[in-house]
Length: 197
Image (cartoon, rainbow, N blue to C red; front, side, top):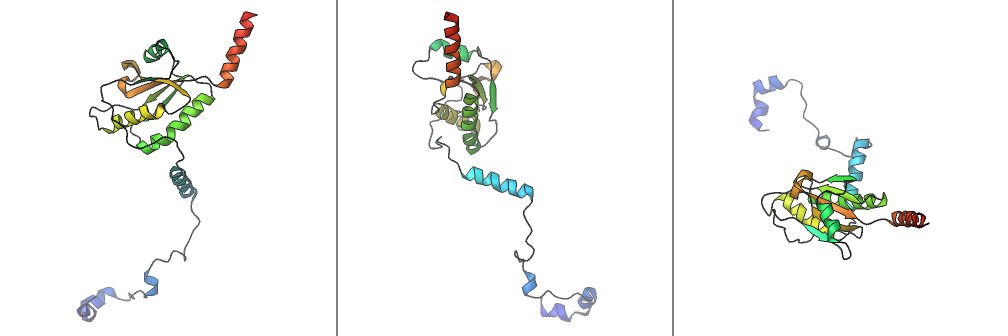
């Protein structure tokens, strides 16, 4: 405050009995009124720590961007083309779906492994991943689609994946065929042996 404001009678009349703050009390003292964090704050902290502990084996390094109007297709050695064609045409029912639309790349990278591993653990064979497709090569949905093609090939559980037909989401969705779990293979062998007698 300037010296003239202190001497102004109108100003002093308006302020009345207002007292200036003491120098030490003029600061926030976090130790003085520390409260325990609420449940919501604790949940946010835990979520932030979980995001920070990204132990995903999926790489977010450079990826070659796919042309936005080209379908994607991948199959491991030993998988017949007929299986891939049937997958592409929706010949297998979607046993689970994962929607990644408008999610950040880091979140998608964190969610995808858990989804694939849980689907495999529950003996699911065909899943549909909806990711979107932009019209420009560097649009966010097309970047995600490019990374998804790179990431899916890194999973041992994934046998094949292809872009979906228009009815199932077109180039903005990908069908994924998972390999049978050991439990499903054992059950299949047992059924075969019973049939043979």
